[in-house]
Length: 225
Image 1: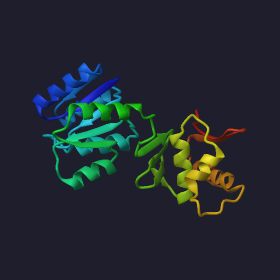
Image 2 (image 1 turned 90 degrees about the vertical axis):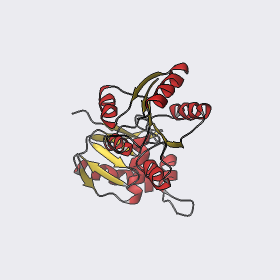
Image 3 (image 1 turned 45 degrees about the horizontal axis):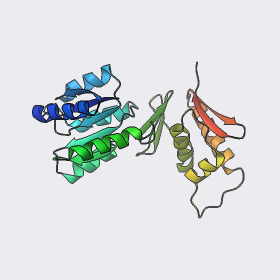
Image 4 (image 1 turned 120 degrees about the horizontal axis):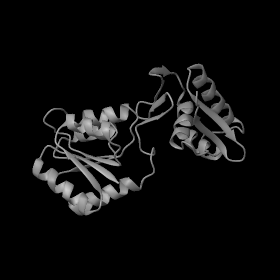
């Protein structure tokens, strides 16, 4: 597992690198937003520990850029920022967890382990496959950067399929993701919803296929040109 520590405090950064190295992670440490962007462009990391207050940019800009590009790498914000609104914004921007300094080394390591145990694409704010992106916070779908108009239920269907990428999703699982306990669901409701999503995506030029896996449910996969 390879981690990136982004913190402008050189002494703390060295301590964090030592802590994670001692826990048998491969660790890189940088002190600026520019260096962080360069490291992220050059290497695939399994987790990023990010300070919001950096000398050359708001650390949140790194997070927003990652999620905008569909990078689902877990981000743990470990920050000296005490402003609650900024910390909430970080979570809304796609951070997976936030810790306020000073924090316990044992708790930090435990939270890192917890994030690394989570399967990929479960917590990502922006999901992507092929030329489709889905902002799960804004509930907005784009194909090649152009907005695609989907209903609330259609977005729920698409999100569930995208989060289960490469694995079939059972009809019952889709029903549970789309409908509340109080809603009546007709026998062919999910089939109709999947059909509408398929047609809208095809009409927008999406390079994906939604196929029915007999006895297993529905599978979303990237269409190879």
